[in-house]
Image (cartoon, rainbow, N blue to C red):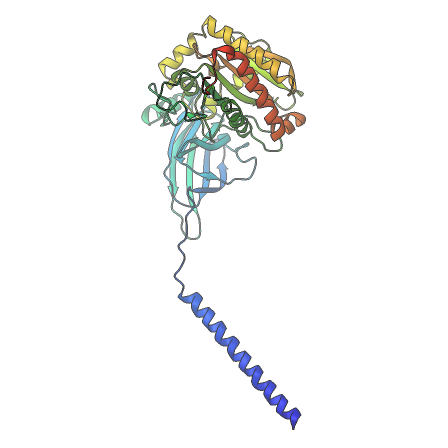
Amino acid sequence: MASRANQHIWLRASLWCAAAFLCLAATASLAVETQPPQPTVAAPFPIASDVRIAGDDKQTRFILDLDRRIDVRAFALADPYRVILDVPQVNFRFSPGTGQTGRGLIKAFRYGLVMPGGSRIVFDLTGPARIEKAFVLEAANGQPARLIVELAATDKAGFQQAQAAGDTAPALRPAVDDRTVTTGAVVADASGEHAGEADTRPIIVLDPGHGGIDNGTMAPSGETEKTIVLDFAKALRAQIEKSGKYRVVMTRSDDTFIPLGDRVKIARNAKASLFVSIHADALPRGEGDAQGATIYTLSDKASDAEAERLADSENKADAIAGVNLTEEPTDVADILIDLAQRETKTFSNRFARLLAGEMKSVARMHKNPLKSAGFKVLKAPDVPSVLVEIGYVSNKDDLQHLVSDSWRTRTVGSVGQAIEAFFGKRVVSSGPEH
């Protein structure tokens, strides 16, 4: 009897637990069902997830998949032949190497930020072509929104006729105007001690090369010059600010493209006492190997073939980003014609020698560390200017240094020492007088 009573009690307890579990599960389910639906938060910028090119050398179609509809403005440029797509700022989520090869009329293409709020896609064409259509389809039937561009082959005369009939001028917002340094240049002040009074400290302009749509050189492992030199410039800015003796202006402080002429304008409008452009070189595949840092100054005639190659490459930055070089402002054109004044050249050469002397104690230097060539970005006639190639991304050992925090810290320290030596006793400490 006791055994049967115990079984009855155990059965009643089990049934009670099961009922309680079902009740709790129903309550939880009801709670979930009665919770208000959570709003879907859209990504801050449209996302481009995939791209395809179809067709041949007569007709070519470019298709870009997007997570939402966007506006597009398309135009063509010559010398070299290019098609430019201006779109709102987009997050490009493509696999590595996308755009390095094309198809049909599109030899290759580039993409990236070209100014705050705006992105750009640039097609390198195999020859003259006209834009037949450029439009964006809404998402429908399970397919994403799509940007579609259709190109048709033409001859030089047909290309010029199409340009004359359409709107071909780039709508880039200038990074700097003739009156002031704008948001394209970021001014850093080390302290508030100079607020409310005339700040007579020398201004040093740091110019991280490339940016946005223009990646610059790229390592085989994927690291880009534009990111390496921006990291270096930010660290150098922090180093220079430590003394409080200088003000620092950055031509760019993020992944934004700045035209070469605007970089020169930023330095001139800021009345800079020194301009340091920062880059990282790479030898083309099959042309051997090179390593070490090199410091360049301006010259009509390149010091050697390698310097000429590099200057030609760097001077194409605007073309890479799709800037219409025929629309270059008159004052910049004058700068290109009127080479740096003799006194400015002397100061530039002096700083280059000081910089080479300081850097060689902490960084590997090129076998010929001082060179010269016709870099457009060095052509401000009244600002001492140098261009520093801090290493070769195509060299495995150099690349290891370029991405190293400890190497960067030591090297920016040496650049800071060179700046101190360059300005010497002309710069007094911003600290209180005793």
